[in-house]
Length: 251
Ligand code: 6PG
Image (cartoon, rainbow, N blue to C red; front, top):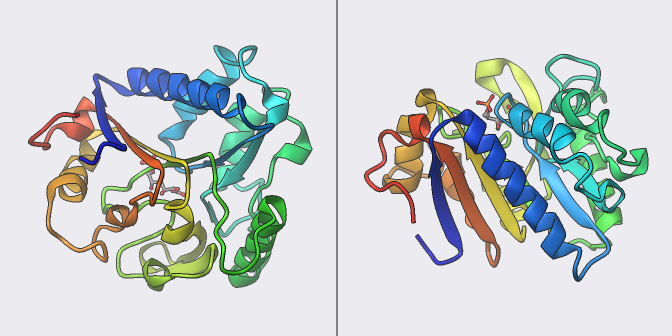
């Protein structure tokens, strides 16, 4: 792995959340030494719930919540109170439990009946927040990602047109297997981040993880392979069950 990239294998999900929380806190601390804000895009699905809960408890009094700004790397095409909503998961497990100002939280407007309009609106939000014009990409301090058993990440699913997007920051993408739209960061936006951290847990991810880290299949089939930060760090934080098929267990 390149110097900037790191694979860390930990025994189990609880240690995954502990290491991720420590890494999150360390990044906040180091960023705020030279900046007045820390920008993070949260991942969805179930894996990050353990991290969110830990941040809301053991780290509640250790983080400067008013200087942390929350976004989402992807969202389901549902209203924020829907049980499928990534925003709702983060709100229930973290954001409602810590003193983060509501003005620091930028959820995807996924209640918009037109998913493309939601994506366009979110892109506008990002450009306004980061003061970037067309042609330049906002740079998040941290983008958290998960990975599905099919090798997707964010809502960049195999065989979808979102994988080829080179200029937009956020797109709506039809996901045939779920018969629904998703709204997602594009690979160019993710790859602009200072740090991208994957959290991967569970045996059901082991074959995809081996392919993504060691295999020769295309990124079209395993979209997590698209994630190669241009200048930033790439951290793969995985538990032993997910790492079971890897031929090397970490740098
Ligand atoms: C989502 C996610 C997605 C997720 C992976 C892993 O909206 O579902 O952003 O990319 O990170 O599917 O999900 P689990 O953590 O639930 O296995």
